[in-house]
Image 1 (cartoon, rainbow, N blue to C red):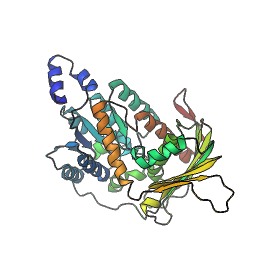
Image 2: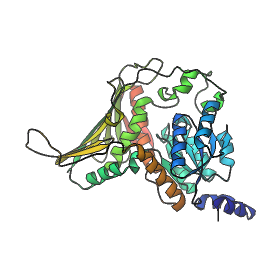
Image 3: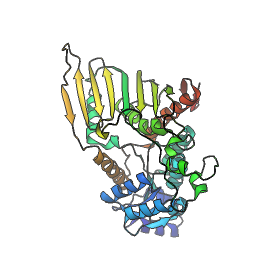
Image 4: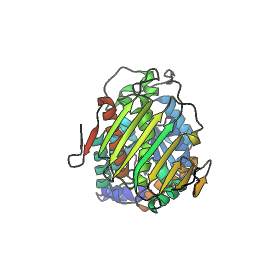
Length: 397
């Protein structure tokens, strides 16, 4: 029996809401996308590629809505208000690929409407939002997958198994960086109808601004810049590999803003202290030279028996040695392997929609990383070390 048919029957007996929460989706999962800009349109195409039925597209900007409909190309329904999309009982799951400041409310509304959710990283914009998202997910028993696709990459899963094997010995330090180059913000003008008030949502009221709309990533009200966008992947991977929770303290500092019009520096470093007895550093530098995207990032796990380097499309294990030139005892390079990781992550999500098993990137993992990222922004803006108090679920200077 199709899931939507079951819900219709259940509604006749007064338990449609419970059925929506407890029943798995049909084999062919019907998906709607909320936010069909660049990333949203990309995910729409990827979901379609792996077999999802893209049934609905929602965006407050008409050109993005049309782009999303073109990517879905299945006679998908068009919506300008995400709440109307959530009212559609034929939709099993939604993609939330909006600016960060909208993630929390949309995910909470979606799971309460009986939908499973694939939400882009970072999970949330503030720490209280993250805890509310976890609570709503667990109360409704929905599937929520955070878009940290490394967790579904076979190469990264292999790297995780190497770290788990104990071959590194004790790891007390992880260093990581992401280097590349960005010349400027987008200067595109608005080219169609935009519901600016709805786009702002919970953010402070402002007059319509094309620079903010097209470059929301670089403004405090909506995101945390390249620092947070890229650290969401790197910090999550470090926490995953070392089975770590939220950091106990974070210190972050940044250089001057070199991207004209942006609020958040594109060159910055964070130091994360973990109660699991290790220190992690992450440096973002987007005024460095331009790198091929397969070579722009690295995480180095420094054990007392070996060092493990994890790159985007390769890894190398270096045992302690007296040799002048270190040589890896184990290494692998798989150029072209990173792009399929997104499809693997989507497949994992869709499988979990059917089986009701936990996805590879659950909300709790997303929250642990979001706590680290939010603490970093607080430290950067306040110029001080920030501590995490798990008892009160709050930060302390």
